[in-house]
Each structure stands twice: as C-alpha cells, then as structure tokens.
Length: 345
Image (cartoon, rainbow, N blue to C red; front, side, top):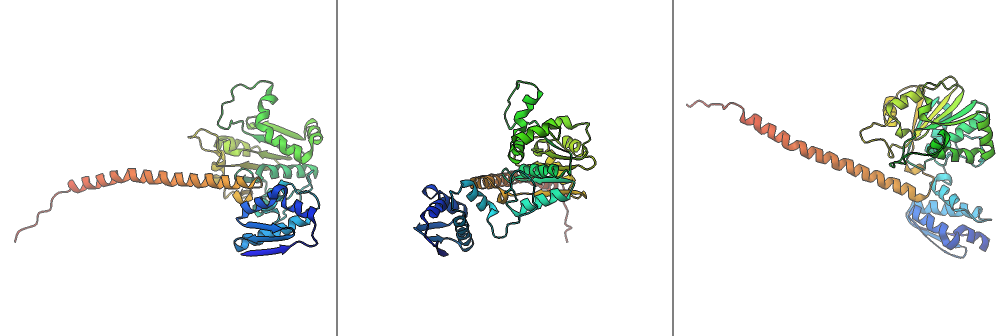
C-alpha cells in the first residue's frame, strides 16, 4: 500500500526536525515498522503493508505537529513503543517530578491499575518494559499523597554471572552497586535533593533482601526488584513481611536468572503458587511493552525463540533416548511368553 501526504504550509525548519539528522527519524520508523519512506521537500510517500503504512503516516503527521524544535530520538522510540498509538491507554495519573509520566502500552496501564487496586502485585516481563520504574513511580506517588509513610526498596545481592570478589568500604558501599538501578529511578522521579531529604527523615530505605528477615513493614510501599534471583524461601520470607497499610510490588524477569542451575527461582515458584490467591495480582509484560531502543525488543524475541528451540530439541533427544528402552522391554516380554501349542487335527 502506498500513502502520500503533503505537509502544508511548507516549512523547511519543521521538515528538517521531522526527518532528523540525515533522515535518522525516518530510518528508525522504517526499521521498526517494515515500511519505506521517501520524501521530496514537503511531499512524503510511505510504501508498505496497510496497517504499518497507516501507522507510519500517522506518526509522521504527529511528529510534524511537534517539530517546531528538534525532536529527540527518545520521543520517536517512545511513539514506536506505543505512546503515539491511537488507542493508547493513559492509565492512572501519578504525582512525580515527571509530568509526562504515563503508561506506554495497555499492559503497563493494567500493571499500574493492579498496583493501585491490590495489596500485592507481581510484575513479570523482559528488560525494558518499565516494571521497576513504574513501581517506583507508584511508590513515589503514594508517598506524596501520604497514602504510605515510607518507601522500602530491596533486591537480592546476586551477581550477574560474574564473581566480583571482596568489595571495599562499609556495608552501604558494599551493597550500593547492587541497588544502583533503584537509586537511578528515584533520582529521576524525585530529584537528588528530595531523595536525600527522604533518606534523612527515614521516609526512604534501600536495603538488600537479606536484611528483611524478622521485620514487619506497616504503612509502607515495598518493592522487591530482580525477584527472579530469590529462592522460594526468600520469596516466602519477603511476602510475610507485609503489615497493615502496606502495599508490595514484586518485579522480575524469568529469562535472566543468575541463580545456580539446580536452584528453583522464587519468582517462578511464587507465580505458580499464588496464582489463585485472592488479593494478589500477577501482570505479564511482553516484548511489545519494551520502551527502550527498538533493537531491545528484537533481541528479547530472538533469545526467546532460541530458548524455545533448545527446549524442543532437548525434548526430542529425551524421547529418542527412551524409545530404545521401550522397544527392548517389548521384545523381552514377547520372547519370555510361553509358546502356544496348536492341536493337530
């Protein structure tokens, strides 16, 4: 399908911002939607399948409206991820420093709705889907509205496939590298000064999961990040810390487990065990909800496809190994049967 559009009145500055440096924005849209975009001055042509071509043209028109100044690459990426889709769900409004914060997909909106409605919410999905960021945003919003008295952020101190050895410094300096992503989200949503003030008045706490044992957390918003690296015992320990007036969010990616191979992930066990427990919501995010570089979604899909192929191959090998045993057992049983004599007439 070929779609054509003329941007009137002609404005060379807006057209330059629309296309981006060396047509970078157009190339990004082409790669993400599988279409071809050609233009000459204010005349644009989009060639491709019907639905992607229509979406590409809608994106071009939306970008032209905001092209009074240069358009950052992040804006184009977010629109490709769903922000500019005609049926995007705005979801609940959150009170943070980011006035433009809102869900970028339907699943993210469902995730935020579940956080608002349920006392315990489990968010499972690949990297870049906003699991942790949206949970921290909901926690900051709850603190600003005085729904909770403090925010507690925790994650297991598990290394991602590397042995870092002894880390120098006091306890905080040792665990800070593991908790850095949580600090980054807080600084973005609250600002550095507000974060420091929250720490001083003990309205904000970040700690490794090992420090949660024996505590009861009342009137708090608690987030367990990287939950795929917990054991079932650690997960049960965390879930039983929830006290009165407390809301808990558990996030993780079951495709990036750093536990020993024989160790069952606490997140996988919790999803299976708590699926039918009233008061707990489980939200599944997919590669379609990723709001990072478009390549991230394709990388996640490629790894998922390779893992499924490996699982099928392993199942076929196991089946092939059991087949000779079944045949051998059948032949043995046949040879061991007594012969039946047929009477002569």
